[in-house]
Image (tube, rainbow, N blue to C red; front, side, top):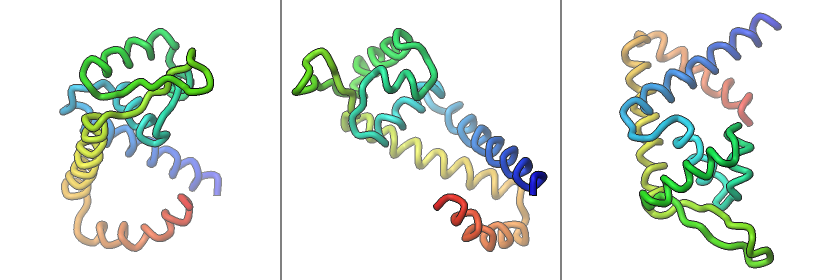
Amino acid sequence: MDILVDALTTVISGLHKTIRRSFSDSSSFSLTELQTIALINRNGKILPSELATKTKITTPSMSQILKKMEMRGIINRQSCDSDKRKVFISLSKAGKDIVEQARFSRNEALKTLIDARLNVDEIKILEQALPILQKLNA
């Protein structure tokens, strides 16, 4: 079982990195910027300090990323009603469009990998394994 767990961890991590690299290479955003946009999208609205913690970068570095995103019209800032010192970050329409484009690019990157590296029989096996993998993700 340990060998299976190690192998799955390595494969999943490597596949994730390969996909991220392949679509981030064609993007004008760094991986950290894409990760930040994805986190904002998942959370709806989030504090800059939470973004810094979740992306494992310093708060000043996150501030610079957010400033750049704001200048590009990707994010909105909204003061907290109960504490005016806090400012929540959310995605603008342009930011949401980037999420959709990134999702499309990611899917295309994976499709390209599958087409290039797997034969028809391997694709069928992968399709059969999908319900099992989905159980692990439930």
